Figure 1 (tube, one colour):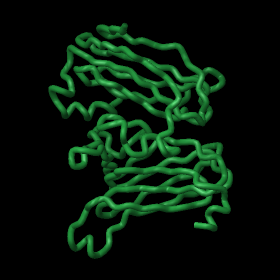
Figure 2 (cartoon, rainbow, N blue to C red):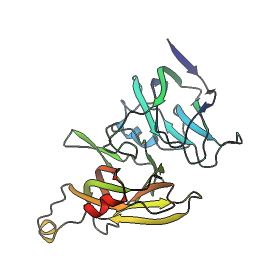
Figure 3 (cartoon, one colour):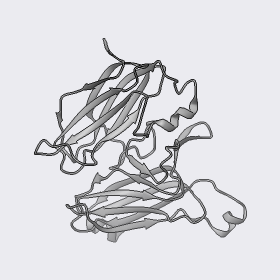
Figure 4 (cartoon, helix red, strand yellow):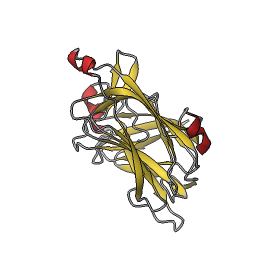
Length: 276
């Protein structure tokens, strides 16, 4: 059984309790008809991140303990597929969130949305603390990323050698924040290709108020030999660090890079860092 939404309608679900340090997964099947689809025009991939939409879209709104919607806590994505497509959104609630609400919106009087098989559950281990570290959720899935420097909404995912989805950051890509509280030694791993005037990958640590404490900066630098040979293939970088005291959450800011993977994991207590 499914749900059909027609002609300028919103479906607002009840709020569901969440825990801010838990990674969740929302998934459902949906297709829209009445408007141009991504199957007809692949350039419509650019509308997925836009906030002013004609296409059907879904939003997640987070609520604090006072039952007020959290400012800046909403996530919104268009649904431009004409055939049934599995939409998946993996996320951590923002700091201070106690509940989440799903809103489905069909803003156009010419559009109809069909959906089914909706699930909301805890996300299974992805092999990293951060969300979607290897971009295995596919070409049209921005789980874990909240913004890019350009306002034109260009699509950011591409297939590398027709196999793996990779993320082109443009000048800047910012991730969503993720919890990072447990003291100890952590491993930061990245694989990708960087470009001219690259400012690197920044892992930024925040205290309980959201203020930056410090950051780790790494670069996927090319050797002089690689520069002369115009080798822009992916390279790997690994760094270990002790979590700064007072850290509650962290996020990534990545510049001028095509990312194949970006992950962070705890590998032991602080003594482990001395042994590496």
